Length: 440
Image (cartoon, rainbow, N blue to C red; front, side, top):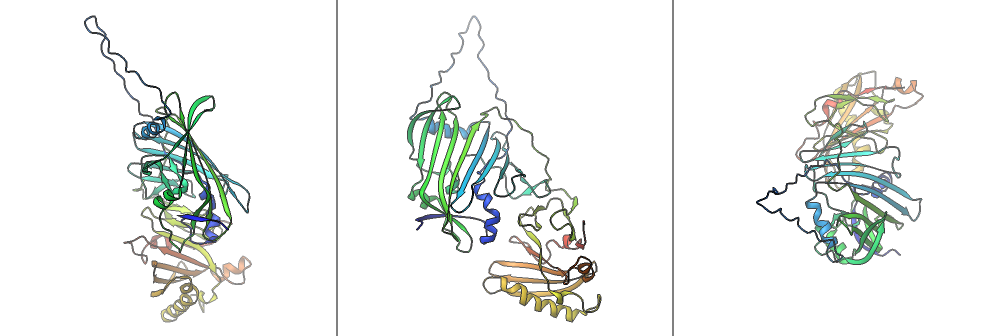
């Protein structure tokens, strides 16, 4: 049996989604963007009437204080680079790897992060840019779009605890001895993550979502400090974990190499400002089936093979092929009276949508309308998780037959707002652009 000690939340809702997202578990917690701030130096004038100012003697690092001093430097240093790599070996699968490069500009509060994982899409490098004013992340279109985050000061992360070293009150480290990395003499330190630390720095899980569980052997951090200049050179983290729906386990190894202290420079990539008012055409997994447009500031994801849009505030619109609900097609051409349409919409909602909600879902209202020669069933459902607006519609039967389908595809557009926004009106401008039959 696996000995469970504590847990770590994952932002996945079920086993299927976890499998899609598991590469994210491996991705080393990387960093973001850096530009070097030049430091100026000055010296006292050396004249016949004044003696030169003596240069202060810099004491070389010592094993007793080198680690603590190296960690304090993250508050003082101007810039640096972090190269990350990771591996995760599931007990029931082949090994996954992750990679990252992060540039950090502490002085100007900019972080640029590039990362990827073989568990998801090894051909794609993901990019995030965080500045003091706003954060941006590359979406499925390749453009950097606004996200709800900003720059935070960098400190070395402890992925297993979902925390960082600055938050640990007592590091309780052990000096292991001297070592050599790439010809550089270093001091080696070890920090075991104890049961008490896990209990103190990890949150209680939400039983409704998949969460990570740390199991024996518990995490260990190994840190290496340059014995000549006192800067952090490398950090290695090892831990074993499992998940709330399985007894299988994963052995994780994460490495981060630190370099470019006060010399790191980079150029910010192009990004879409939050004030941008341009629109773009959808081009993705559903391009041969449907067409639509959306504001450029909306982020597009197709992690699960269907489009999901996200506004800068965090509201989401999911668009997927849902079923084959023949009753949603018109009875006679485009003619169906409003009363009959609403009744059909209500019945379809009760049969197909309501069972998917937890708790006691309530159908707040249903509507039936025709747009772009297609009939739409709109319903707003409230549940324990909040309000969701759903739009169901069928592709025209003639289009289905022309493409060898006996029954038309039924599409579901599901809209989940953030607190304070109205699901019934969100993304209406996008929905009005929906058409059938895109690229062949």
